[in-house]
Amino acid sequence: MVGDFGAEVRRRLRDAGCVFKRPAKGDHELWYSPISRRSFVVDGKIKSRHSANAIMKQAGLPKSF
Image (cartoon, rainbow, N blue to C red):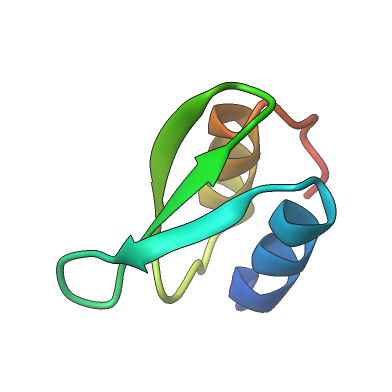
């Protein structure tokens, strides 16, 4: 099932204490996670749950999609 997970991923990142750092190339964004202590890229349009879960993993959060 294809959907847009972008808004929900961003909400969960903010709730976990992750912060938006700056826009990146194209429609991507650079975020920082204090949990994993690393920066990671979030796509503007997240169409698959696999991509959404990969972003959560990079942020140090459990899979939730």
